[in-house]
Image 1: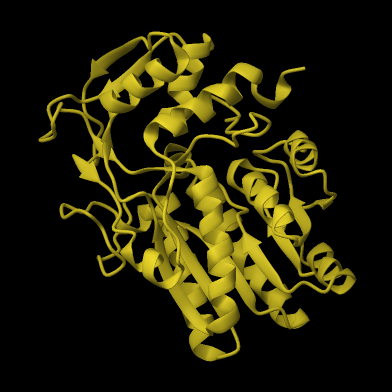
Image 2: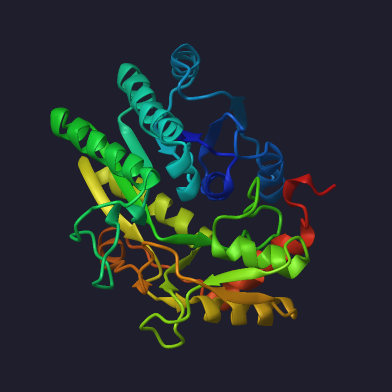
Length: 339
């Protein structure tokens, strides 16, 4: 049995990760400050798996508590999801984002180093690529993030590359996500934004359930099949299975590895709306408004490197993504606040 620490494990992706880890036979300890998550997600994780996990409510920037956590456990690896992730919020509050995302990671790897734990899977983002005109995007593409959130992810990547260069004992996986969506097929856990959703899929789901009146579609004059922006949507269960494959990869490889996690397919906004209408049986009210500055027509991954090196591929299509997202939303119309 292997014990792992999951930072941010009560969040959207972290909670799905906990399910897969427990079902794969890992012992799981979650550290989360619950700033943008709910402890109810972890109760649901244990209902799904019928297995226990340990939860410590804490901030990873708390050096004393972090050191105590590593003294009280013998972790074999850390999966690091703790971080703030809203692009618009990062523009308004850059200092908060740099402190939480960059400083938090620095504190974490210092504690890991002191405890002799040198296996880390980091939750990065395709936002590090910035605006790319050529698609699909592979790992050799240049990095030029266009907002503070993306810059914090890239700074952490650079920090971890430097760490790996300085100490050959480190085993580090940097996973660049495209657009995680959907929910666990049980309907027990899913995406529960604290405020108005920043991302397309939870916004559509909340329009369908009646929490929001209308979806705004930013531009319908792009050079795409229907004029709306095309993005790569990956089911959250596929995404976290990529982390399991990354853990396997790190058992056999030292150094720092970078992999895209995406489906390798692009879907337009109108395609996603139509798929969700089929899944929910409800019309999705929407209106076209002006483009947002900085948005590109198409962005989707080349996941070939992850296919080859991690033996991983996304298996859930858009129809299944929408079905699982709708199942979560109908069972939890008010998210984890639903009685």
